[in-house]
Image 1 (cartoon, rainbow, N blue to C red):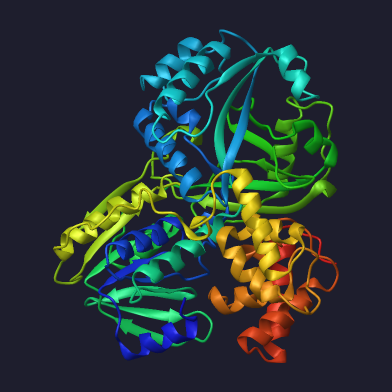
Image 2: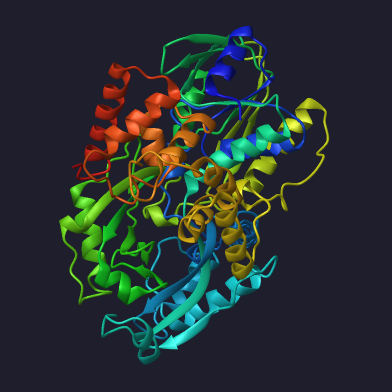
Length: 563
């Protein structure tokens, strides 16, 4: 990848592609990747860092949307399951199978209501027993046959379930098990899509910390959020893929009618060895008394992810997990695992994001559609460029969403699609064996080639996939002390040089899992700032500023305790 400084220098010359994509989340970057696969360069700009908005705040699941069946969105479920299965293959280094358990308190309860909701005769969600869930899972399995890689569902009795997961509530009558997938590092996948796009199409340009302003007579001002430098461009086509910020960007283009009606979802990273041991590899996907769908599952070690809330939010920047939400999540888990009581001190990291949902007048937020649509605006004398605006969109279906947007761009450019992205491996999945045994053998060869311990090579492979070779090569030979046990100085330096890092928070919150895992020992931030400063040419004042702002962000927005 070219450096950010090289791209800024090119921007100064005015030599930029005619297609402007605003928004560096998964859908904007997915569109950037698809266009590049067709040989069409685009200029992508993001006001913050890549994947720093809603794309960094999902439940980290790649899923078909079992509960969307309840609201009759069968087409969305079918599409989501197909895309889930593709990601299990195309991003096998970060997307992995996830067994899911649905605890059930009755056998027949809610059957009539579930049928009415599926037929769209009722919109409010309701409690469901084993029979309607069983029927739903039969459909789920059937819809997920394309590119299938995982087993079908099964129904467990209470005795069978407690034999596998201790601590389930005594009033649980049965458990439905099915399989979806989880993504270990969504922000890394976004960066890999950027790199893949530019490898295919070297004229493509993706710039973080570059804000797109309002348009005047077809010209749009771009402002660097690091230096304040401004640039003017006159695009032929603009794609508004800013997610929860869509209405804000639309306003700069002369549109006042709101398209979005987002909801804020908050999650907690919990450190509890006893609950992690009880759950094993199972995710509990459970219904609350207010008919919300919540979840808890084990990640690496003794960490768990608990979520999520669903609160209406008009401000796309409303990304603060509140103490009331923490109390709510603790409270809804208690009826499912009554033997385990969570404490505020168990929370090591919190995050929240506003879902980019279409504006709909419904009482229950869970009834708002999770599907996407592309709204197209033809050029006018005052705005002489085509505007394509994405409303909605979810992580799992980003590829097919990007394909739809790219096709609309191609049509306006008078070009035809050259290839599909359906079978394109992403980033570290390129050249990485799919089978676990073959992958372990591959990692051992990396260890031998770089003269690293096998355990370290395995960790790098799990983190980067086939890109582990480059990181291992950087770590070969004598090493300076790393900022953390699991991250080396050479690794952080490579990230700074190769992945358009502009701020210290980019490293802590997105290029690595340092923040997300809630483990920052004393002095780690200072060491990270020193490594980044050496790689990026920061002076002492800039290093101190970055360390201070990142520390404050971790304490306030993410509720971390910083040593």
